[in-house]
Length: 429
Image (cartoon, rainbow, N blue to C red; front, side):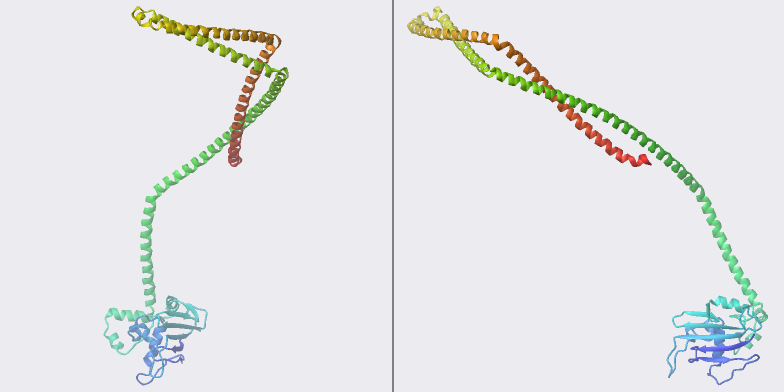
C-alpha cells in the first residue's frame, strides 16, 4: 500500500485544482520557502482527519480555506482527496484504490467521502486503523520535532514507539470499549433505578387493573340488568296496551249503545212533544196560566182585606183606652165617617169577591172538565216528559264522561306508542 494521488483545491495556498502523483518508494518535494511544501503535508494530515487547527498550523479551522490574493478572490470551500493503492488488500475493502475526500465550507459544515460515497469521520478512522494510517496512527515529523523526540520522557518515547509499532490502534479501541462499558454501566444503573421505580408503581397499577376488571364486570352485569328491566318494562307496556285496547273497545261499544239509546229517547221526546202539540196542550196551558193569575190576584185582595181589618181592630182597641176617650170623642164622628167609607168599600169589595168567587167556580168547573178529558193524560205526559228529559240529561252527562274517558285513553295510547317506539331499539338489542 502506498500513497498514489493527492488532489488539492482551495486548501490554503492552492487556489486552483492541483494534483500530485506519487510512485512507490521515497518521494521528495523540493522548492523555495513559501512555495507551499508544508501545505502539502498539512493537506495530507487534514484529509486523514486532523481536527485541531494547530495540527495544520492555523488559528481556526476555516483558515485552511483559500482567503484570496491580489488577483484571485476568496473561495467558499476547501477540498482535499487522497488516493491510496490497495492492491495488497491491506485496507479491508474490496477496491484496488481507496479515495478519501474531505470538504470544509465557510459555514462550518464538513463532508467526508470514501470512493465518492458520503460517510463519517469515524468510518474513515475504522477503515484505516488496520493499515497503520489514520488521524493519530501515522507520524509526521516537522521542524524541531526530532529534538522533542530525543529530549522526550520515557513515557512519551513509549507512546511514540507504540504508535510506530501499531499498538495505538488497539489502545484507542480499548479506550473506546471502556467508554462504551462506562456508558453501559451508567445505562444499567439508570435501568436499575427505573426498575425500582416501576416495581414501586407496579402494586398500585395492579390494584388499578384489578379495579378496572371489576368495573368492567360490574358494567357488564349492570348492562345485563338494564336489558332485563327494559325487557320486563316492554312486556308490561305491551300487556297494558292490550288491556287498554280491550277497555277502549268496551267503552266504544258502551258509547255506541248509549248513543243509540239516546237517539231513541230523543225520538220519543220529539214524538211526545208532537202529540202534545196535536192535542192542544198550548191552549190548555194558556188557560191554566190565566186561572192561576186570577187566583193569585184574589189571594192578594184577600190579604189586603185581612190587613185592613187588623188595622181597624187595632185602632178600635186604641180608642177603648179610658185615658184617651176624652181626646177621641172628637174623632168619633170622623171614624164613623171612615167606617161608612169602609162599609162602602166593603160593599164594593163584596161585589169583587162575588165576581172572584164566580170566576173561581168557573175555573173549578173548567179544571174539572179539563181534568176529566185531558188532565190525566197531560199529567202523565208531563211526568213522562220530565222523566225522559232527566234520563236524557243523565245520558248526555254519561256521554260527556265517556268522551272524556275516550280522550284520556287515546292520549294514554299515544303515550304508550311513543314509549314503545323509544324502547324498541333496546328491546331489539
